[in-house]
Image 1 (cartoon, rainbow, N blue to C red):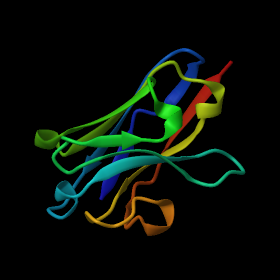
Image 2: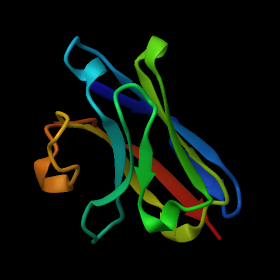
Image 3: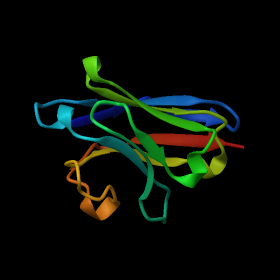
Image 4: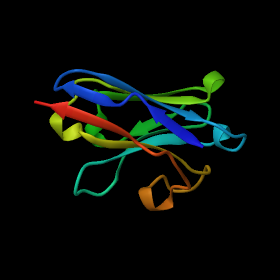
Length: 121
């Protein structure tokens, strides 16, 4: 099970930190990441972190603004989002899939319920 928290409503330029707690012996050993979905748009990849937190990568739009990390002791992945823009608004979903599987929306095996992020200009 993946459980997100940390969403909210902020003004442009501000920050939010999302958290995703993984529960279950399988999930805590899998890569974790984030997707987001704005109204009327497809779900898109944001960032991913390996099971041990040593390797990360993200979509082009996160460069210099978002950072994904993982605390193995807490079985938690984080998405630190700085300098938020109105176009960052949407529902952010925590995701996880077995290593080796493509980390794309259609191939994700485990999803959280999502947390809403609203950014006002």
